[in-house]
Every structure is written in C-alpha cells, then in structure tokens.
Length: 79
Image (cartoon, rainbow, N blue to C red; front, side):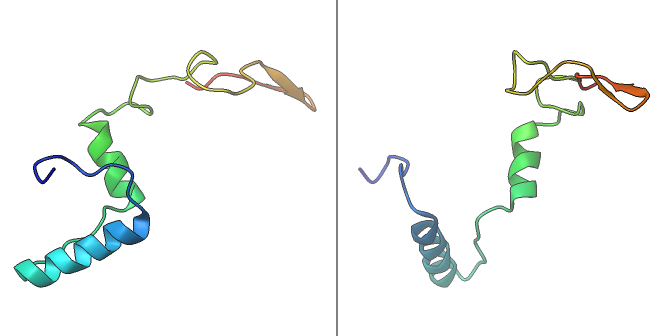
C-alpha cells in the first residue's frame, strides 16, 4: 500500500527513485555511502564494534585462538 515501506527493491530501482524524487522536489536525494550507513547504524557508539570493545568467536566466525609466527605469538582475540 502507499503508506507502507518498500521491501525487496533492487539497487537500480532505488537509484531511479532517488533520481525521480530529486527531479520532483528540486532537492538532491541519494543513497547513503557505506561509511554514512555505518555511522548512522552506530547510533553514537564509540567502541570499535557497535556491540562493545572486543569481538569473540561467539559473535563472528573467525579462528579466535593465539597463533605463533616466528618468535612472536599473536593473540586470537581483538582488544
């Protein structure tokens, strides 16, 4: 319906919508950049991740264990 948000739209269709809206209103509309989208999603957080200061294997799919390279040990966690 006309009062509901759009779902499942292509990038090209979103670009076309912005173009037509810009023409209709005389104001410039565009999709946010990746950096702008990330900033908006962060909602003012200041930690390295939106969910806190560190990441664990419970939150992301990565090795998460210490590893040795030469004579140095690198931690498997972040922060």
